[in-house]
Image 1 (spheres, rainbow, N blue to C red):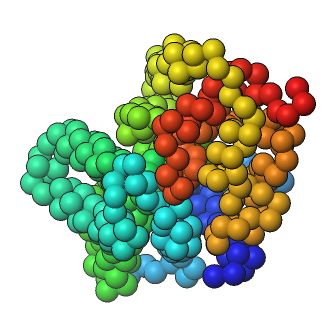
Image 2 (tube, one colour):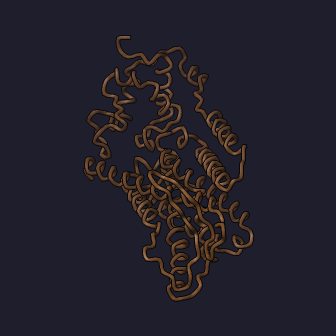
Image 3 (cartoon, rainbow, N blue to C red):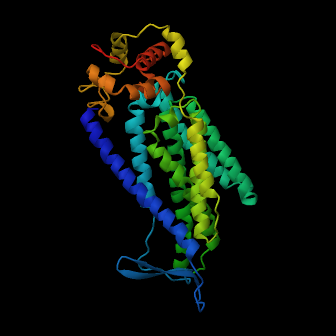
Length: 402
């Protein structure tokens, strides 16, 4: 695909993905808040379960939650479903455009697993399909009906297993995005397979003059709550590709799960608060856990190893330049030769000695410490070459004439 066409197509799809995702998550947050703040009408009114007064912009709103009278059909009933559908559709399109059409760049890391694009894409697709089936079978099983807490624990363990397993076959970035795609797929199918059919059945019953089975709605509410707790973890994955210290870490799967726990904990705090339950320790614990995670996983350069490899011999700029030119400038140049790019990613170029020296710190972080560049180690940069760059940078990143 022509790089310019690819960039515009990716931009348009990503834009729609973000817009529909915001709309969907916003409605999820709103209805969780709404259910928690409804109050019994005073005096009581038949079939009115709760109500709330709100003010927004230039007016006041009275919202009621009610049970329909058999035979009653609302003249204009608003559904919340297309936001979820288009979030999934655009998300899958992005998965294909970015990760499957450029599998060698963004999905495969041959230092992790020596697999081809077809195998990698097959694993990715199977993860989404099998992941949904396992999740759904678990939550319609007797275990979930009788022991919801145990089903929750098992779900978390299965997600942890998926995260670990994917990081053993994909590069960190590709593994993270597939965990996010799995969760997002589960969330959307929850809406269309479990939540909407229950709502449709209640509408059909009232249209037929029967009392609706609101028990089905309560079961559907369970999936809605699941979706609500998964929103913050999914949002983290959507931005994670900008932060290689997470997906590029040797224990990337553990970092991912820890941040999932933090996100779910923060969401739980607000859900409790919406119900009037004050919990003063969840936010401080989440904040402390994030700081502790950042400290514990901070990249550490082995200064002794670099010093031992140095042996007092300075690394000539020509050596560092040759390494960078071979492994980096096919992408990071004003005129990239890599088929996936028509412009240098993030505007980072290494065309001149001054360009290289200016970005020596970034080279150290991405190439020597986290080893997330080159992408997927497509050019097979060796540890010896990374060490050479580290030595050159530690010796002052001197270029010719200095």
